[in-house]
Image (tube, rainbow, N blue to C red):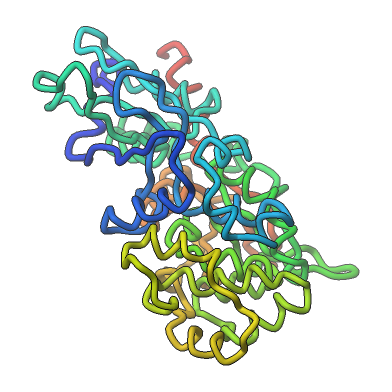
Length: 398
C-alpha cells in the first residue's frame, strides 16, 4: 500500500527541532522560550523534556498557559504565583497527552501508525528528524512535532486513493458530530475554560451561539484554541473579564478597551489579574533589573496595580488585539457569508471540500450549518476525517 510505504519521518522533512525545557522550569520560562522562537501560533510550543532519551512529558503552547491561569480562582487572584509554578504543575492541570515515537533508525513507523495514535487520544507526536539521525549524539536526540494537521495535509496530497469516499458529503459519511462544545454569547468566557480544555484535546473549538425562545441556535462565532495560541499572556485577563461573545470580538478586533477590562476585573474582585494586562508587553512594565521576557514576567509579583495613575501609564502600551485577524470567510456551497471569526460548511458539502477549506484556513474543524436558515447543525473535526479515511483503508478492495 502506498501509505504504508511512507515513514512518519517523511512528514517531518523541513520541520525545526523542538524547543524544550525540563519539568522543573516555570510557566514564565515557557512563555519566554515560546517567544524566543520568533513566531506565535499553533506551531509555537515547547516540549517538557530533559533533552535526552527520557520520555517527553508534554507540549506547552500559549493556550495551555491561558487555561492554566484561568483554571482556578487562586491563579486569577495571584497570577504572579501562577507564573512561577512549574511545568509539571501546568501539565497536571490538564494539558493533553503527547506520544513519542522512538527515534530508532532501524524501526519503520508508517503514516497509518500516526493516524492510529491520534485516534487513540494522542494530541501531538514527537518524532525524529530523519536527516539528523545519523549524526545525532547519543546524549541528545533531534526531534520535531507532528500534528494532526500535518497528517490530514498528507492525506489531501494522496486524495486520489480515496476518490470515492472524498466525493461523498459529510452528512452521507456520518461524520457531522453534535456541537456539544458550545457556550451562549452572553455567558462569561470564564465558564468556557473546561470546554476549551476539551476542544484543545480533540482538535476542535468552542462554538459561541445565539439562541432564544423558539429560536434555533445559530453560530455567532467561536473561541478557538488555535487562535488563543497567537495571543500573549494578557488575553487571560480578557477571558476572566469578558463574556464569550465579547471575547470572540476581542481576540479578532480588539473590541474592548484596557480601562474597560480593568473595571470589569475589579468589579469581580480579580484585582491581581489586572497585572496580566501588562505582561503582554514587557516595555510597559516598571523598570526591572533585567530586560528579558522571563525576568519581566517574574517581576509581576513586585508590581502593584493599586495606583490608577500607574495603571493608566501601563495601559498606554497595551496591545488591544494580540491575535492575528483571520479575515472574512465563506461557507462552502452557500451564498451568504459565515461569521468573520469562524468557517462553516453545510451538510451537503463534500469531504474533500471540507478538508481543503480547513487546511486553507489552518483550522482543525469546520462548523456545519443549515443551508437554508443558518441553524448550527454540528461540526466536522480532523479526527472525524481521519476516522472515516482509516475505515476506508480497512475495507477490502472491490
